[in-house]
Length: 200
Image (cartoon, rainbow, N blue to C red):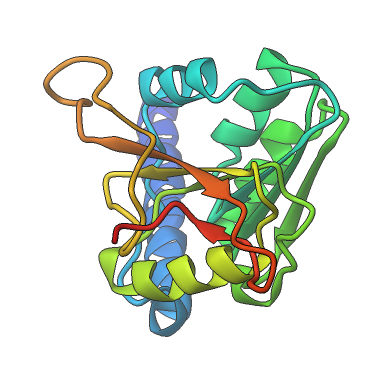
């Protein structure tokens, strides 16, 4: 009986590995779909992350929170950009494991396998998100109730209902120039809680 060449075994092994990763990716999305309401794990283009970090005036020691941090790219970029503390929330188990693995050499980064709706955002100086439109109204209420005056919100692609952006960026090539909305939380009057800079 003729022996199967090593190259064939290698091909079968690589194909099997890639199929397994693809299957795990699909399963990890399906498991959290009822919670994420359609939002998928998609990495934000590096040029978009860099453009946002350049304009939000980060300072060492501040806290950046990424809601749905995926592979942790924003957290690592922010940590390199300025010695801030970075915290991410992710429900997709595969993305969470990738984020922890890629961020393990960085100090000052914490990643939670947790739904961010239960997180207290009152300590955050910057909140970064790239979420599905269906959750933006609920997110706007949460941010308005929890964020302190002066905090910054960066929302990729989709605006926060009821808030007026301080800036709208369109960085990069035609493939990556979807809008990035930058918001600054303003102080309310003395008898109200801090709210965002809202439209009249």
